[in-house]
Image (cartoon, rainbow, N blue to C red):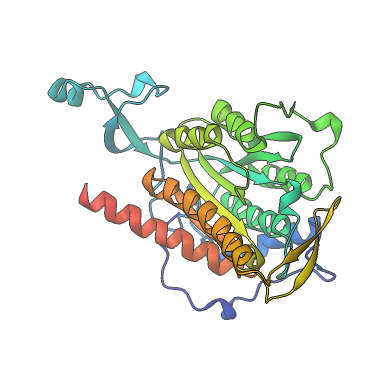
Length: 335
């Protein structure tokens, strides 16, 4: 996926949207149109390379292939056929051989479609921006020859899409994202009271994704619990995971002093930003959630990219992936 060459400013790459775009609903035409934007991420190449967004470079992502990369400590669930017996003989500890991924890598888009994602004050709802980002990454994966699948989850249920190659894999994801709701015939599993929606989605990926898969998690991470955190950590131990933190500027910083009517689509309320105590609590709530997700990702080797509803999607994803690639390259050179 990385590294990228130095890119121009985002204003030089205006995002092309279909006529009639309003930002409050996910439209299939907009998602299909994203296939024309992948060149901005540097994935357009005449030579076919079977790694996500790799261009002419080798991918820093690791999976099962023919190109040996390194040895690492064995973790429960690893394939014992890849044990590095020579390193074990020297260290008396179990080690595993790790290879660079070569072809048709499974790529999972885990997309949060809960009610809280249908909010936004800049450009579009978080749910719309998340769908556009997933479409862009899906088309980029298909461009490199990878298989695209994923999980789209709501407050009560979720649908799993097995990774498929070619345009079929991307289009099945886009069709699902463009639906207003999940059809009953598609529901894989209903939400259980004791399981959070995010944890349930991550559990499905954990059960189906092979070691070395690439997972993009697009969510605002509201109401994620300790079980979901532990599942994300487990995923990061065997797969390459990139968490894309969705947010709106109004969540980050409250509006000027005043009283504002707010609704969740069912209930109405008043947000009073004239109170210093409320403003402090308001801002602290977002900072705590943001830092909680960011810290977990950085300490566990999971990619972290913030994406606001006001951001240029292309520029933000490209910059975030480039920074992650630079950190991984520096880590490998020091190892």
